[in-house]
Amino acid sequence: MASSDDTDTKAVGYWPKTSQKLDGVNLTFWSGPQSNKIPVQVINAFQKKTGAKVKLVTIPEVYENNSQSKITTGDVPDLAFWQPTRSMLTGLVAQGKLQKLDNAPFEKDYKKGIDDEAGLYKNTRYSIIISMPPTIGVYYNKEVFKAAGINEVPQNWNDFVATAQKIKDANLPNVGSPLYEMGGSQWGTQWAVQAQLAEAAKAGLWDRVNSGKEKFTDSHILDAITEYQSLFKRGLYNTDAGSAKDTAQEKALWEGNTAMIFGNASQFLGVTALANHDKSALDQRIGYFPVSKRGNYATLIPDGSNAVVAFKTKDAKREAAARQFLNFWMTDDYKAFIDEQNIISVKKNVDSPATVPQASLDMAKSIQHSVGAMQLEAIANPDLYVNLANMVNDTMTPQQVAQTTQDQFTQVAKAQGAKGF
Image (cartoon, rainbow, N blue to C red; front, top):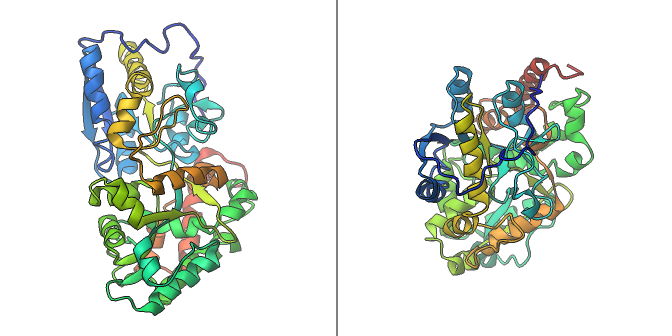
């Protein structure tokens, strides 16, 4: 049951002015290994302006699991990156761990749709969106497409599979496989399955799953899992898909050893690093397109680096300082932050850097024709990606993946007291 504190987020001073001095105040900020460089510039600027000290702590992977284990023991930070989805916020809100973050001074400055895409739980804001939420889509190597005689991007799932097959049949000398999976890192295995569910999600799939009226073992999800497995059986993926890591996947795309990867923004950040953040080189070589079963819906999945939560620490001064930090980040420092990160602005009054790659711009544009991913729409986030990685490694069948995932979902739903379970 969710906490029902009577915090007045409209009260004078609830959102402190960014310039307020905080000498002697020490804050802790948790991050996962993939995100621990993102807040460095903001932290340094905030410390210089306010006199506060902000300690950045990297929690090992799997970040969310290890963080929640620490939180359960009473070890909580002041601030943390957190996936701003229903499934990831539910537990922390139910335990009364998070500060309410409604009525922020910068809320009115968000671009259309950004402030209500994520971060809400039962109409209360518990996380602040600091960067553009990514969509699940396909990043592709334009040079490989050209070498295989492909002039247009796929317009639906069947086109996507046919394109992969055409690249395979072309036997290009440097292309190991048309598709590349990172089963060793596990977390990306779910993208190809979730992309196939976009139309079903738009038609209420996750509402039905949330109420127990539809299951992972029913045709919508099971068929998507089975279709994903068929791509491996057709030899469209890399032979080491079960052990390959995300870093190898990103390198393969950049170097043209593969044509396409299902990805989100964090994977593309890895590619941009390989390109030394050269916009011209990236625009020439790497593109992005959304794909779904019957068309080109993108699947929206805010990740852990898109939003920040503030914890209740029972120290009013630190709690206020945490809100001041968020206010500073999203106002005084926001332009410097996005310029340093070379990312798209989520604020209508702050221009994106001119150096943002076109693939990122296309990904952001796809939000206008997107539906929520499982993590955003479902009441629980079972280990679908782990189970799929097991399937990639031939230790589970599609039916076992679906049943295990459903069992996990049911367990969490029951613990939440959800109806239908």
